[in-house]
Image 1 (tube, rainbow, N blue to C red):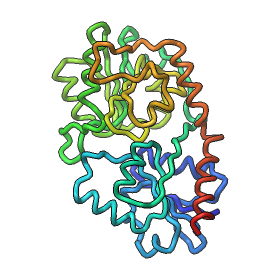
Image 2 (image 1 turned 180 degrees about the horizontal axis):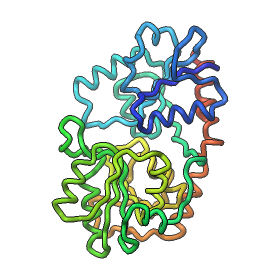
Image 3 (image 1 turned 180 degrees about the vertical axis):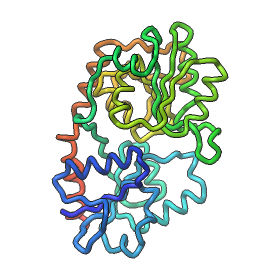
Image 4 (image 1 turned 30 degrees about the vertical axis):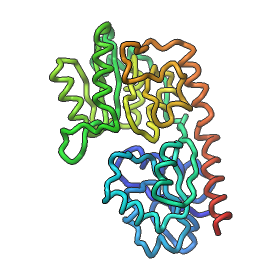
Length: 314
């Protein structure tokens, strides 16, 4: 089976997802060109769909991944763009029931849910002491991590509310009551959180766009990773922290309820009872849950899905 998997080329997670799929899939996958014998076009980056001529899309089977949509951002322009793209989509692929329900508000095309995978071949345990030392962070600091965007690109100062940067800061301040907190940030558009940390004199370290190897080290340096989002498709940190056995707490968002032990999912409206001291059993359960989604095995579910769509809908 020949698949063209469209990636955004933004040097971010979706590019890595596409490259990983082409590496582990049993199918013939291209990111470069659509040929006459291409059987399926997979729009892995739904927001870049119009980079491919509509005349090409109309002549192929088109699968579109919606990683997530933010309900309160579905204004008239976004809805119109969704519906225009929907004209050339045969089948949608997503990760959660929440996103499936939102898709179904604007489309009558079928929607399939398949959780994402973890590439067990790129995430490795490292000694915390060594990674802390390389970052120049005191060993006695309680190191809290956040590696995702928190600021809108339109002005680089407005909080990206679906990512919950305001919730993240509340969590940090709650932990600051009993711990010597230091915050470790990476990723694009961290201006909002950095500004707030500065205003509250909370020490932080920011590494904007680290390599995957460096991100691996950043995870291993942490005492805690905090997911504070209001709306998510993943996030990837759930999978990566679970696999590396890094303590993580999360809002009830995205795929958290299939990956994380229930004890580490917190209520952002009730931070007085925040439990950030993860038990050993919670870490064990997180890793046990993530093993179902190791790429070496779970990728077959994506392969089978694409085959099924081609045969059933022809």
